[in-house]
Length: 430
Image (cartoon, rainbow, N blue to C red):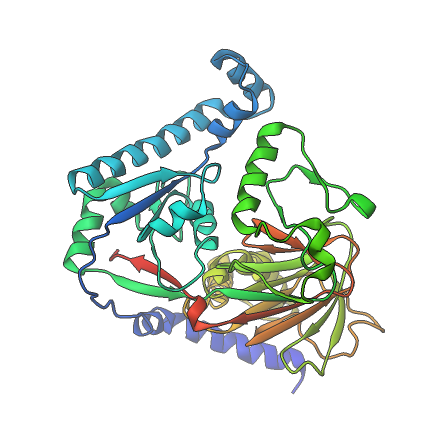
């Protein structure tokens, strides 16, 4: 049987599968379970730093009309920025009002003002914003004990996959009534633990909010275009970096370092300059079989992250599906069928948030006579343990699109998932 004939047969079976996929998905749903009553005593509200608020910080000497003119000249939608900022503020005030009525102690902070003592004080972390605010909050949680749930401050502009459903944005009091009655469940979302080995592993981390970085001798020094961004990044990095690790003691530090934060969505390894090829050696846990690859970087994802960047990298568009079907000489009745196949394939890229496997994707892997070496590595797959050795010039390991560490030639990163690193996420019914 030829390859095209085999593809034709498999495509025919796919149409039959699509007819029953809805039923299969219903059968695979997790039945909600009830937990014991939970009335938080100390709530830390972590609010979003809106784009409007950030622009105000950058331009403190501009009047409102001057700021409006400058943003419009830049092509920004000033009215939309104001609306989004006001929605964020409204949800914050509504939440504070509910907590005061329930006599629950709370504090309010954001990425500019957060500190470790305040974070440790809380028995519930409550990010208000979008998925970015939730990810930032989750990066600060170091164990599987502290509870977290998020309120989507503006469902009209943010999908808020990690946040509570939209109806709870409109009825914040209901959230705490359900917690009191035990009508909720925990999802223990797996997170990736990263351990570094080699030289230079104690160099300062950097944050993706930094404006730009320079390579060569100055590659560890960050330059900013404004003092507000510098202050923000210094504060965020200070939250993570132990003051004992001074520059003059780096040479004396151990050659192995477990990073103090955990990735909820993904860890990306690759050159900081996206146009530069990333050269990596990849191993799937045995530390014997290494594959040398050149690519646009490697993305290691959790089940939670399988709905995010992992899905975006690996999704097939209806156009690609249509091209494959034409190659196999498969005729379909309408473009709707092509869209159905594309949608179903993309859905199957996702896997449960509590799964302990890591999904890896080698982006745009170069395949030729000499690469990858040895042959046989797939550009996408799953593993329990992922080991990467860098042969890059100015690279980074980026966790959840935020905090990052240098990852240059000779450095090894070991990525694993452990139950004790899970994120205790509160989920309420749809």
